[in-house]
Image (cartoon, rainbow, N blue to C red):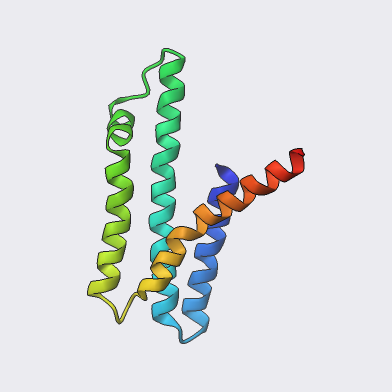
Length: 122
């Protein structure tokens, strides 16, 4: 989890630097919006795994964690829906394709990392 969050933070930092140093404002802001929504979505998945771990150990993780777990799918779909809606409504500020690319970036990285780990085990 820490490595994936670090990679996402580096992508967000690069997006901020692109926003500051280049004239591609809508591209960098769209990518940043996608990366932030992806990070929040990934955090909800992490909380869900944390809750399952605590329940397996017969500990109570807290009511907020249960709510995030119960509504995890709604939260994840809601995050991408809000990000896409913002990109559509404010199309001069956020580029829709880069919002989707930013959102998919972490998941693509995870899939490639899992594939490389599988190849390393063979």
